[in-house]
Length: 307
Image (cartoon, rainbow, N blue to C red):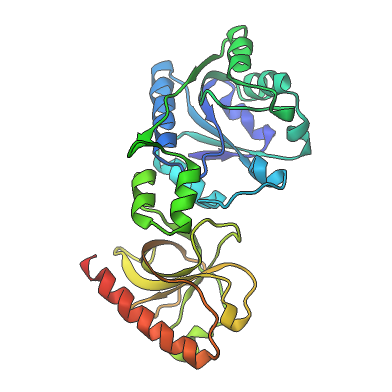
């Protein structure tokens, strides 16, 4: 999959494409149904398949940010895994926010991206003041060679599969439900960064990943699986949060990998939370924190024994 972020790169689509457009936060079963439809139609028409999304998300730009299921990197990883040819990531800025709905269709979708077949939800809204809707897409597309179709709602357990539902499940956290709604494991990835190395002083060194402050996953301690450090998946215990005991500020994902002590800075890893152990909390001393980490590690090892 190739990522296109600047209009100068859109020439890659000058022969036309089959596309869908939306936030795609989570890339859940409903999204996957849409993407499968896009891929099938792209193959039939002999055109590339494209997912169009935004960064930041429109709600974030307008100050109404919701917790994110995935950071941008992980969203791209999920889309690539589904076999999409191009991920068009549009910068949502003042110019795009002020663009009239008609211009959004004629200039962006038709002229710049050469969309020939568009799959959207029938509740999709776009353009300045969210004035554009499914009917406008159909009307403007009909005269310019762009067919527009909608897609049925995907239902699991008699409820619509949605990003809102997954955010709620991550906040509880109900990891089993999250996995079912995503159609696969939930994980957060990134490059291993240098931390403050306090864990080494108590024989619990950690892999440190920076994650968005707005991540939907509940703060706390988890039993986790780690991939990216060799042929085999490793096991560990991780803390998601700001580390209040050491007066941390930014959100981090800190993972202690069991029976592993190699230097892996800058390695790309993925951390999959398997079981929630406890909420993040402030301890009165570093010794008290160490004692709790020992208990957390023992509990995590026990829970992960079946993996």
